[in-house]
Image (cartoon, rainbow, N blue to C red; front, side, top):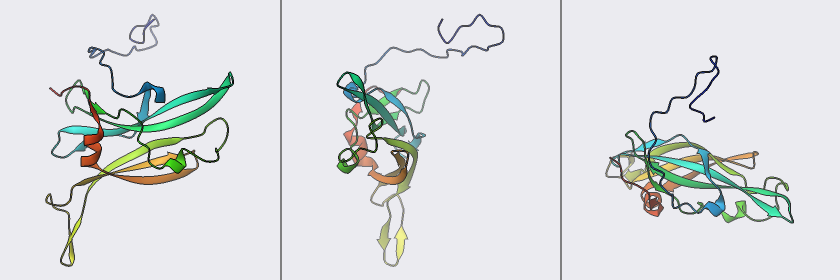
Length: 174
């Protein structure tokens, strides 16, 4: 039985509102399938939403259950229904190699980075004795909060223009 039908009168089935064609993503699936992440934010003057996702892959070692590795990627999607993915990372965004190397936290979960929150801020320029955050400033910065190994939290900054140019095209917006 699919999730959109039910024979139980006490359960309200989900209602399919759109089912489009399957479009392959340029994401390298060796790093796992796309999973949840940050809430999406609308990028001013681009008419696109930006979000970060995580993936998980289990590396089998010696036939036994291996070690789970988590990675982060980014995507943009269209602001109009059916909210098509416009661009996506082809490979994980490696924030700092020390998070992916060295002593493992434990042998069940190793490289656990998880995107949690996302906000955009204008880059500020100092003009005389005042800070200027006008549209003529340096640009836009994405500030992503993330968890690391379920023990630490960090805020990471990305130049939005550079991030967007690093993403691979998937489909157009209507």
